[in-house]
Length: 132
Image (cartoon, rainbow, N blue to C red; front, side):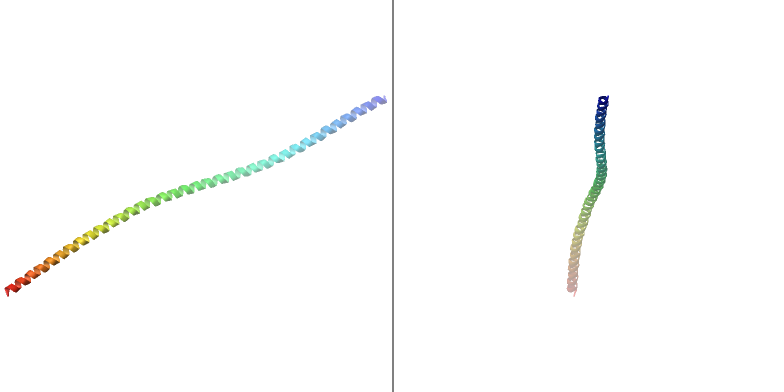
């Protein structure tokens, strides 16, 4: 009977050792699970940071695109104004050329009139001289 009890105790000790081994393995696995859970939380936090950074970058890109569109619009406006001003400058230059032409024409006519009046004056003087 003592042998049976010893045998039974031996079996109980083996089972206890197995249970302790299983508990130790379970604790190790739980530690790994907790470690992986922490890593996943860190990854989620990094992912959230990356999403935030991506959103900020997209917002900056959109703002930059708006600024570029505004600059292009301003450039087009400047080009339109430049063409308009060139046209106005050309009109003014044409106007000045026309004024110069008319002024020269008037000067010529005035000179011609003066010459004619002077000649008529001379003719009148000649006539007066002949009458005396």
